[in-house]
Image (cartoon, one colour):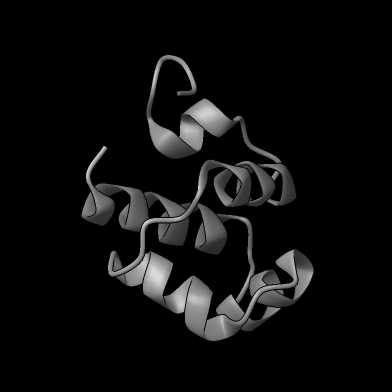
Length: 71
């Protein structure tokens, strides 16, 4: 999945679940700048961070990454 597609999915799921960037970043114990760059597609997160995001948003990792299996 390309960065911009992943960025759009992270942003969409965050908003769908009712989190602000500040709230989700605090829950994940990362900076708002890191989350913002992830949502803009300027940073490709490691799989562990994506797993944490999916867990915090209460969605399946594959839903977030739009993959049929995690790599």
